[in-house]
Image (tube, rainbow, N blue to C red; front, top):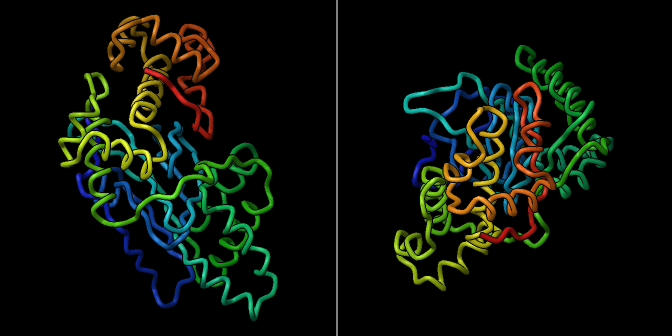
Length: 307
């Protein structure tokens, strides 16, 4: 499995034109900004044609085609799709980014915008949309591609109103998540994330990761918990269970082989952790997976998963 994720995480500079309230962009995957990153702009992110795992603060969860999420200011995030060497996914992402301060300033002259302020506060933890709200939001996002000027702005404001008013939404990151946004910390965390993704089938040990980033084991353990929001063991387990779900849905690989493929060395332990995470056994999960779509991971994954 190849996971495209550069070793250096970065603050993302978002360049919005002087004549624009927001940026609308369609991206192939991978490209240079597909990394664990943060920025002061709020981001509405639509994944059109791929599945994978979303990291947003301390949230680790699956996404499938059509996924729409909203990431608040300075919340670290990344959408990762495992790829074969040299593989690309044209137009995987549509990204809308905007500074909330622009709309807050405009509310002094357009009082109808005042109601967005509380919504932007809720978005600080990340939001994921579902049901009819997601479907309607998808249509608005796609409509913007060929719109300009006041027509595009009107569609953007309609999108914000739709997302603000729906109850078909899940919160992603926990209130307790407060990362260190310094460049060095995010660079080190991205190195570890990239290694974990690329080596899920291997024996991934905390001491090895600590040496990789030049820390003692105890310092690394504290560092990882603070910046990912999960213990090292919990993070690895969540990714392994996500990968197992993907293999159960998309392949006919025997469950015993999947157990070893995702890094577990004991089938009973794998079954126990999988059941705790999904409230389903691996075999039941496979039976319930239809049309090659993964049964979603819980939208907020803060529970402990022991190895």
